Length: 261
Length: 248
Image 1 (cartoon, rainbow over the protein chains, first blue to last red):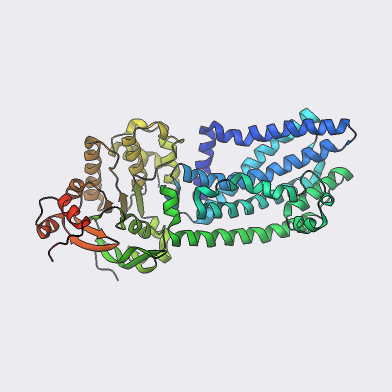
Image 2: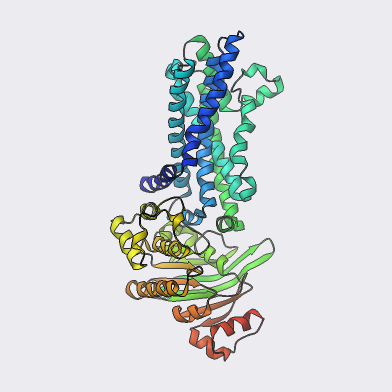
């Protein structure tokens, strides 16, 4: 199994080596975001919000973990559709779980690289030290990574079913979740009716925990329990949804049509 | 148990899409080392039949057995021993030929991939493209690289959907010769679709004509010509496509 997963992963890594545009996705856009939000935070700090750098840059870097993770799944499989390679993959003796696992691992690599670059730049440019999160850093990272995988699987299932018409979801879905994930502001800012919805997202618990950790100077691990519990539910649901949708797609003949369009 | 020598059996295969019957109660088999042509006008059900035989599309009813194994239950084992090439799919254009073939070699668990890739590129007379980015190849080279991918795992059954569609006559003949050579030497069964009837006469041992998803004629190219009292398969094709029938 790991040989096949490794082969698929290698295919995507070859792509990053060959394609400047794909490599830019890992570094260019996150760095641009960091610069904009970094300067916004500096400005807030000057007008009397001393923790702006901490909260905004922490939120930005962690949001990027979720974003890269879900994009690795969706963009990798959509790339196969764009280059008309999807059927070659689906007629190889590969389990669909292995394909998904390879894209998840790609998400891990992308998120690690992106976080490392952003973490270093944030320290150099704005004196924001990601390591202030201490032992909470890795579980927060893992939780957002897992949520990205779950959202990525659901998005990809919809793309396999509805084809090119649904491709906008690759970029759109994360931004649908961003306002209720309390990325850049505390949960309390949301209207009370929306807070209940927000608490159903693992990302909300992570961002709340991140702010508490940065504010108090000690790791807040309590939010991790609901975050990981929700992730387990969402991952199981996303896997089931992906499998069910793939069955429907096979039944309706959409897979071959999408791959040969 | 399948008859000795039978590697592919299709029994009463039917596929309906929202009221449209694309494949209608189709039954046929293919022997080891046979090249079986699937012919018919656009929309006759050839491509859907191939997709069903690869497990890409689920049948409405009927069954498919490959190497005596039910496709529905043993798809992965079967896929390990079959492969597919089509003029309508391609390998990632932004990877080099070596990278593409290496990835698929790994997926199929091909031992000694370097040697196998070199052998196949030599068989299809394109050893010089090994380090070229696939997107920079001519369409004839792309087709042959796709065929190299299709032969990587030394398949026992090979599905070829219009494999020479984009090739000039010279390269098309080279590809046909290479396919015939592999068929002779390795006993590979090939399921072959093409709109080039001259090519079908040259390559196929037996052909099946499909119309509206149903089999309307079956036999060797010579038998079909005799029954149609025609001088070429192209004439037979036109007769069938316009609703004519062959003698029993």
